[in-house]
Length: 78
Image (cartoon, rainbow, N blue to C red):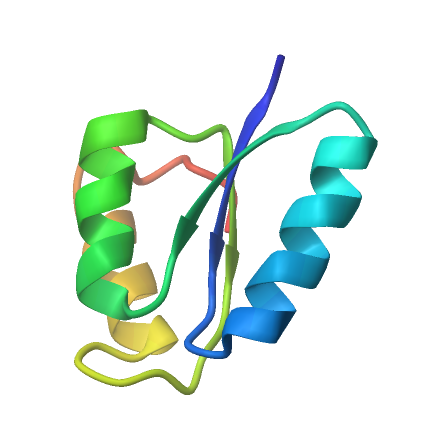
């Protein structure tokens, strides 16, 4: 089963996406800011990330830059 990381600082958006993706058979992990997203990637090893751009702490652009500059995560679809 594919694991998807959903990252957004708006809880209602995360819950809508989580419910829809789980209904479609995916395993879903969530994060509410960029720092949590980076931790979740290391901990949960998702197959795909759905990433918001405008977030506190680290925005989506910076999360993407960090993941793409790391050999272990550079091919991870975002």
